[in-house]
Every structure is written in C-alpha cells, then in structure tokens.
Length: 437
Image (cartoon, rainbow, N blue to C red; front, top):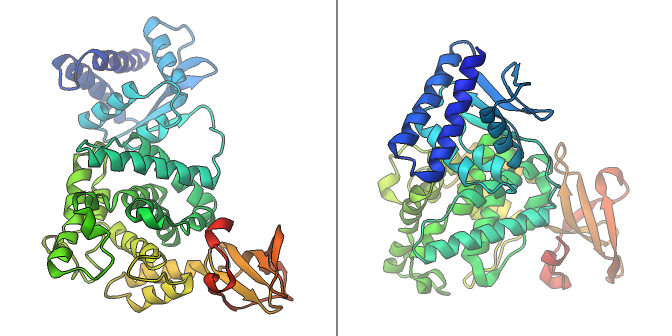
C-alpha cells in the first residue's frame, strides 16, 4: 500500500512540475495527470475519500506517515506548507478535468496567498484544509474587499478581457462564512448605497442579500457560495449596454428597454468564458429576470430548467433595487420593500422563498429607523436569529429631539419596558442611516 501512495505523490509532484513548463494540454502533463487519476481510482474501491497532508512536519497519506522522507515526499510536504495547506481530500468520482483544474490553480497560487484554500476548494470533489486560521476580517473589511474585487472585474469586462475568478472565489468564501456566523453583519452594510455608481454597488449588495436569502431558506454552505458569486456577477451584462440607456433618468422607450433585456444573456456569455464558474452561477446571471412564473426575460430561456438559486437571487436583486434611490424613483423603506415583495410573490417571486426571507427580517429589518414609545429614535442594527422581532438598536435621537453624541445601544429583547411603536423616515429627522451602519 505504501508503494501505491508513493506513486500517487510522484504523479502529483510530476504534474505540478510539468505545468510549470508546459500548457495543461501537453502530452507530458496529460500523462502524469492520467497516472495520478489511475492511482487514486485504484484506492477508491476501499475508500470514498483519500487524504494527503502534513502533520508535525511530516507528510502523511491516509494512515501512513513518511517518517523517512525521500526527495519526492519532502517536495510534496514543502508545496503544501508554503501554501499553508494542512491536507488535501480527494473524493471518489474525481475526473481528469477536475485534477487538471486543481493542479493548475495549485501551481498558480502564490505561496503567501490567503485565498489559496477557498479557490482550490471551488472544485467540489477535492477539498483543502488550511494549517493556519487567518486573522478574522470585520464585516466592513469583507464588504470593502468585495467592492475592490468587483471593481477589478468591471474593469476587465470594459477592456474586453476575461475576468479572473481567483479573487471572487476567495471573497465569496469570506462572505458566506460571515453570513453563517452573523446574518445581520453584512446585511447592514447592504444599506450603503453609491447613487453615482449604481450598477457597481448594486452588484455587491445583491451578492450580500442573496446570501441573506439563502441563509433564510436554509441552503447548504456550498449553495451559499454559489448564491454569493451569482449575486456579485448577475449584472455584468449591463456593461455591454449603452451607458446612456443604463443611466437614463426618465422612462425608457420600447427600443431602449429591449436593449436592457439583453443584459442577462450578455452577462451569461461573459461568465461562461470565465474559469471555474459553476452552472448554477451561469443560471443566476441568465435567469434573474425570468420571474417565478417564467414570464420575464430573456424569453429564450423560459423553458430552460434553472437552479432554484435563480429565484432566490431575484428576490435579493429586487429588494436592493427597491431600497435604492434612483433618478426615477424614491427608495422604499425596508418595511415598504418587504410589503412589495410579498405583494408580488407567486407571480414575480417564489412564494416560499419570499416568505422565508421576509419573515427572517422581522417587523423592523436591519437599517430601519424606528421610534420607541418614549419618543426616542433608534436605528435597527441587528435582528435576533431565533426571534426576528428581538432587535438591537443604536439610539440616535432622545425624547426631546436632540441627537445623541455618544454611542448608545439598546437590546429590546431584554428591555420589556420599552417597545417600538413605528417607523421613522430618515430624511424627516435629518439622519443619514449609512453613517451609522
């Protein structure tokens, strides 16, 4: 058995060496990848998962520890260490194309990259586990990184280049983990708007909100990542539409709206050309305007079987659009947007997903300015996960109408003597909600 393990390690290292010298299609690379696949398949008859990695400075393969290292095992150990990877798991069913993708990314990753494991993990039958836990990013840092990643992708599309997926996979991994740990954290930041750069910030906010919808609908962590990526990329096709149409302040003509209707197909063509983009994400980009009753656009995709994540992203897309100031519409408050979503369920939006998402937001969603029964005004900063009506407030204005100058927080779940009596329009009381999120 030890000899079989060693042959697999040799094939893996030889594949990586070959990729440093030749393209993936080169016969020498294909030969080594074929040997690697053959070796793995020979062991899958007894196991569904095969693990190789480092422990206490030594390489292991399943239950065998290479205590007397050879040149090839030392090299394999070094390759894992410099990428901060503790172990790789190969699952039964891995094929030659997946091995090629995995080894290509493995070679391309910088040794100090903090996104190596998330990117490598995008290939679902091969997983990696890092040896060190990176310093935890704050919600603002993750949100800011998402903005930067999308800025890079937008620039690539405008220049006619095919965008890289390396950065987006890494940031989506962080966004998904943060959404699982604290659903309100990133959601609050989706209330930040850049009115002069709508398509850009809207893309990031839809990525955030799609994760919130998926969290409310209890999808798997893998599906959360797909939702995050789909949300970020859903409007790429708008970069192919005349900017004058995109930013037109008045009502669009039929011809102009016809151009707008082309953006899902344009976007799908872009993401199909990108590496490592799953079919579910392409579905999201193509189908986010199809509607639940499939009477939306593009009409050519109405009969196509779509991932359920399409309907979840459509909810996120509209929620952000409804709550954003546009030249032709005032933004709805969060509660008004919830009401509008519910009015459109069963036709435009999936009824079950809409109900699960809007229920998770509570009576007063994050970002809502509310008045308490003592006339104090506060901003909803967090909604209870088990009880969406138990909210954390940041108090902004006292009972006499004077703005607080210090940071005052109130947890209504533990303050039975005070309760919310209504919603407040931020403009009327001179509050810019984004400054407090």
